Image (tube, rainbow, N blue to C red; front, side):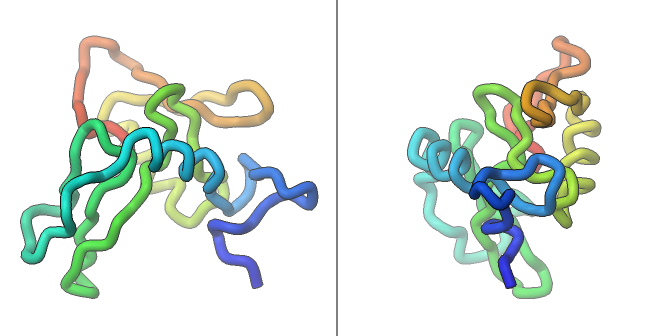
Length: 128
């Protein structure tokens, strides 16, 4: 059974309406915007990262540990990397809304997260 990261259309392309994650684009972003800080060895907050990094350390209380998470959207374009049916797409949308972003349908069926109020700014607005 395929996991959420590997689910794709029959032609191997990411399905923006599906349950998967656009790992091809994420891999490119991980290379372009690497997380250079080491994993925290004690609790330091829910999300630990750099505004310039594509990934962040996210606290998982059920594991009493940090796990590395990739962002839900491409910081260059606002393009959502999770399919709308992804199990945490709702969390990403709620986080974006709290940070002043709205989701809009774009070219090729892709969803884009755009700033609702340009006056609002948060350097950690990647919607983890």
